Amino acid sequence: MDLASISFLILAAILVGSALAVVLMNNIVRAALFLAALFGAASGIYVLLNADFIAIVQILVYAGAVTILILFSIMLTQNPNSKNSNPGNHQWVIAALIALGLCAAIVFSFAQNSAIANGAGNAVTAASTNNTVVIGNLLYSPTTYSYVLPFEIASLVLLVAIVGAIVIGRED
Amino acid sequence: MLLTLNSFLILGAVLFCIGLFGALSKRNAVSVLMGIEIMLNAVNITLVAFASSSTGTAHGARLTGQIFAIFIITVAAAEAAVALAMIIAIYRRRNSVDVSEINMMKW
Image (tube, rainbow over all chains, first blue to last red; front, top):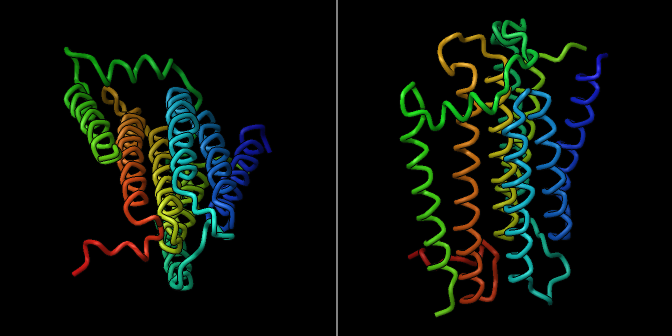
């Protein structure tokens, strides 16, 4: 057991545990706070995978912004008369069956795929260069092959989403 | 235990299924959104794991998965903003965020 394996096991336990807590908690505010813990543990997984830029973005966008948005909307839509603020619906048995079946199917297909099962991409290589520089070049570079056009489209999507959220959410 | 691509893929699959269960089995609309966020995170973990185990040599081949993860984070943020605005608008109109009671678009 090296350090990476131990930290992976700890992070995976936090991730699965807090995901189950988000899904099963009766109090929705606690569920949202466990969601923040899940986002933090996911950024730890990204650090393990040498994706330091994604890890920071994950903390900024998910643990920072999305959690606050969700907490605010819970605050604005809380019905004070209800004891159970996070109720399940009557189809939860079917939902559990579908989720378990999908999980079994995916894990089975991993076991069948010899390339993955034998560890052909034997994973988690040490970082040789600074990932952030390469990501910056891949996103913005105008001369070499890069993702400039998808990047611009993504910024347009964000603009439309912000304007749409304001228009939908304002009082009329 | 050696840390392989497989362990990250199975972690992503388990998280995705937990999120799917949450999105399917909850009545509060905010809870459904939280389930979807868990699913998006699981997909991101899978993409970054594939990127870091990639052995491609072409320009940027090893980081394409991470670029995809950045775009997914962008779209997820936009989706969360619009969805929460809609939830608040519905709450103002119906005084409830129970997805089984919201049937304005049913005929």
